[in-house]
Image (cartoon, rainbow, N blue to C red; front, side):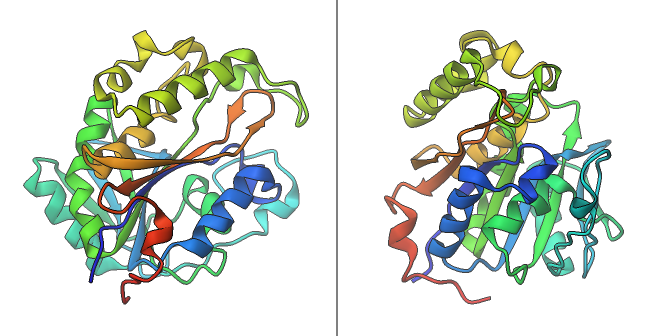
Length: 277
């Protein structure tokens, strides 16, 4: 019997998350070992934004993009050689078109660090096809939720949809690796987890006004928007699992959220429902 896959929001932190997994990386590794093998993984990352429509990667072998600078040389030696799946890119574009979104297949675009860095921990074997869907700009939380809703049928097709961003993302306050945690980071994380547990969509969409110190947690919104994509794809009824990730650099909350189908209380129950590739 085929079950709908959960959707996942991951906090990908700084690029050095690839080399320093910590608690957040261990949580993803444990989850990857627990979930059944998906047909493909589709990632929405704030590091690919487009105007005039939604981009969809369509490469058979997407490159690993080192889209950052000033980090240790070892980071630039890392690769994530997951295959692509061009046929699925067309499936995604059909779903987007049916929901009123214009789209463009991009056969040259590789995987940015918002995709491959967390996937290093979630699927270290890099043997599951990976595609990316861009964030079309301008975009607000409601628009991101609607984008996720358009992609919702992928879950029934054996696809793991991942919104990759950051639970908090104020780089103006970026600290040393072992800096004390700023109090607003913990307050914002608690509020978000509570609102997600309560499935309070109105509050979540209005987080800018209702969450504590939201503008400090997110001076700009691009790193929180993938959460709303994952939430929209999850549907109105879900069971939430919070995967603790701690806080990096004093200001980057690294928790992840797994949205399981409400008919499947947890991902553990999916272990015997593996979907063939």
